[in-house]
Image (cartoon, rainbow, N blue to C red; front, side, top):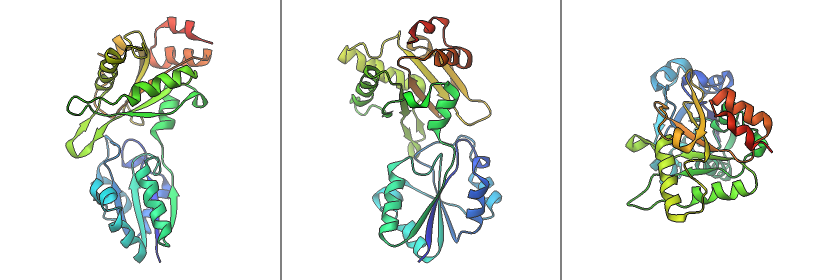
Length: 267
């Protein structure tokens, strides 16, 4: 029986993979890459193949979810197989499910970690990691339907004095990537319906674009200002801060251009 190794690609391009990850790929019999759960803006599969000296086969959502990764599992039974994943390889439940499935079939699994958007956001914003509550994804509206979950999660976290990390929807097969503006407009629409004063134009928010690249953008401010800020190309992500430690407020002002008056939020 072979093995299945999950390897994190990091955040931006093929240079983000660890040296250990490169070594594992060079020793593999088959290499697959899943690129639909996250966008790596600078990634070139061709350059990656040149770097590792192996053919990299890209797998679709259908292969991993509808077909339950059977193609990868069958290959892993024959020899050492690698699955490359943007960011850290086991953040998405899809990959955890595949690992469980592999172990259940007697396939040995290992994990080579990579840089994650979660740690990158914490580092870029200066908001302390132990003060985050439940994270949530803001999905694209569908036929007029807007999910209430992100709005509710932000409100629940705020009641506990916790920050909220909001992932923004990705439709890789459609080349649709939600922007900061899209996400904020969706939440403001929900605010008009619910009227709980959770997301208003005066709500403090942090927008981040292209974390892990040479030119990340980090902007903190009130929704009305951040809404029309030019973040450039995706991927984008949002954070809604709650109660601030004095160091967090200083970080947002210094590192993200937040207005000085947020010092008044320090508790």
